[in-house]
Length: 223
Image 1: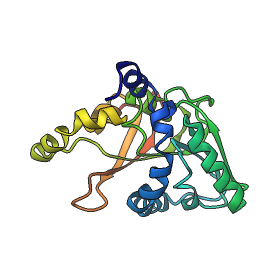
Image 2: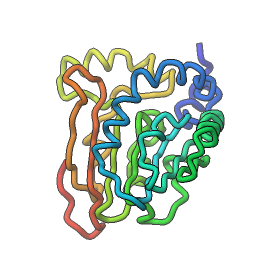
Image 3: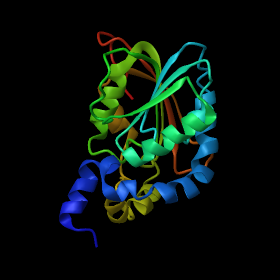
Image 4: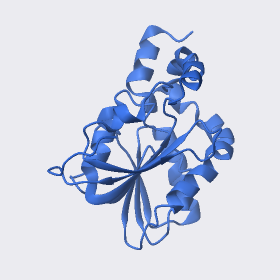
């Protein structure tokens, strides 16, 4: 059983917790088979042009990095130092001079407003303590007219599926992630245009969300 102190720390900052860091070996062994194809396809659908500035929030061990075009400038951030160490080794091994990674809190991004043309995040927003704050930061650092791509599990609109998945919530929260996060809740009142929301296949537990940043003064479009 996880002690109350450890559980509180895991829920507050899962990326930086010892438990999360200890997942690196299992993450590298199992997660690529589950996620890589989906993530690469989502990145490819953005049509990232030469010279674009891209930020990935929650870059982890760098699973997604090969999916970005080499003519783009890519920055990846994550709180887990052990995962970032793996990403740095990958970058060095592949001689990717267009990619940098650095430690940073997804809920408090240390970039100026409107710094990036594209902001992406894969399977991260449900493991932070304040998903709405993370999404607000993503919007803040994205340029007006820039694109945001999120791939994550969100609570199903189907009440039967939602109930089944919610039943595992007590277990998954102890492991550091939520099953009850709703996409509409995360996007509410943000200056975004929701462009596309879909599942990679009908049986997938994951949702791909693509949106365009709008100027703060623009009228908000309900999500």
